Length: 214
Image (cartoon, rainbow, N blue to C red; front, side, top):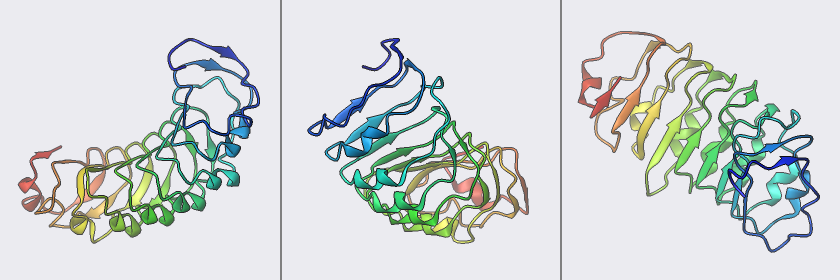
């Protein structure tokens, strides 16, 4: 039911226990997010992207029951507060998109436990602190993309250059400072690296080894 211009409030969905895909993106729903989604334990895809008419809400602990979920696309739908550590238990996740929301917290280190994760999109939030070094533990065999632009992040892990599975990293529009690790773009699979509008110091000579550098 994506892009069908639906509006109004969402009903109780808890009876749809065999449902595997729930795509309600690009609509005009209002009121509360249907927390009955917690009961849909066979879900593999949950897409609630671009539903900015709903009330502000937080990710409930019961979401951890969605252990089969591979695609959790919850961007621009007024989630606020903390990014919960239980996300690290949702180990089937391939794509985690929480961009365009109102998270005011650090990136939980537990995300580094998501061994199947291929894409992590957290841009346009209000995240603070450092990028956790545990993200270097992400070892999905296919492409691994990290977008954490437009935040208030301040520190890059010193072993960033050893995150070999990464093919794209976007750190732009943060408050990152200090020197970038000199091996950031050397070897591995990295094809795209963007660090625009930060406060980095030091030389960039070795970074020019990257295929695309902005």
